[in-house]
Length: 439
Image 1 (cartoon, rainbow, N blue to C red):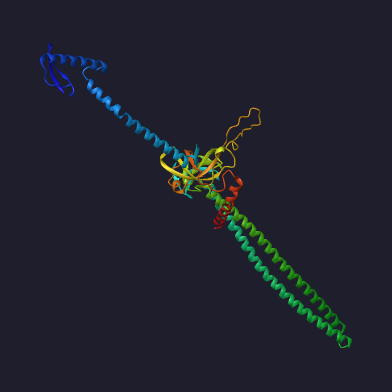
Image 2 (cartoon, helix red, strand yellow; image 1 turned 90 degrees about the vertical axis):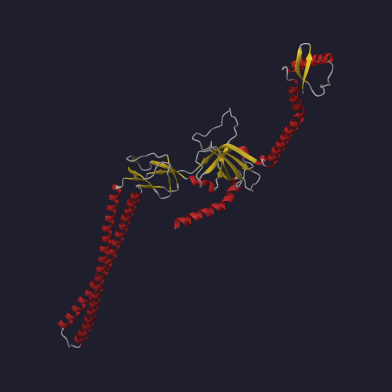
């Protein structure tokens, strides 16, 4: 409260507490009391460093000091809850997680190449375009290949006519065979008549009823008919042999026709190869040719990346493989897509470390060997619904965490058990492929 006091220097206002307020006192006592209050105010001002504000500063400090215990208790409670939650999370989940940041998105990219040589006449798609299986990617000038197809077709037509002509000849020769057989029957009939005539003349000559000349004539006729029968048989055999020769010629011509048809099919196949088509669904990238470039056989044209069939290769340390099992859930964190939560599944493990497949595998048969923990690629399957969204690009860096709490009996590190478990699946898949090829 404010109180006006008077002293020998004059009157002034001073701040006093209700406890310090007192009833009116005489002038002398009032002056002494004011002097005492003044000295007290000076001392309080010296202690706080700010003269004139002792009560306000003291009140704030008192509040802080009074609530310090409560603040510390609140902070301690928060820390305790966080520690309990961290401990529970580790016991329930954290100790089962096996993680690595040495992981990347992969895809089995297909290299599109020219199967025939020629100049690129047109390109049907743009870079980074999505195409479907069977779509035309580019075309090679097909003039020479079309002429080759026409020439092959003409040769096939000519040989086909040759085969047909020989077939007609076989029919004609069959008629000659029939004629020779008829002549043979006639010759045999004449030979039989001549034989009977000879027997009759011999009988008459023995009884002296026929002349010797008639007997000799009958014998001559019999010999001629026997020769005619032999000639008829030879003609029949010759006609049949000619039929066989013509059939052989027809077979040879037919095989030549098949060769020409094969050549025609090859020419047509080469013509079809002038159109470079996409074998699978994917995105065109890394195009290496443009219109007017000359493409050699087998030269790379572009790459086709199947974004709907991506997977992850995670390079785990060899010391981390013990608890990994096929089918375990995997949490995938993609650096380029931090807002997406992706869950995968452990699928298989590489048969060797990456260093074994390098161009120059390391040779540690030296005296200064230093043991280094190797990394083994583990294949992680990406769900189809995630892959179909085409958000993942091969080469992206990811962080994977495998939850090893749930595990099957076969470990990815146990090759025998793993391959035995996959044998039935592989057989079924092979049967499905064979069935599709037969279709």
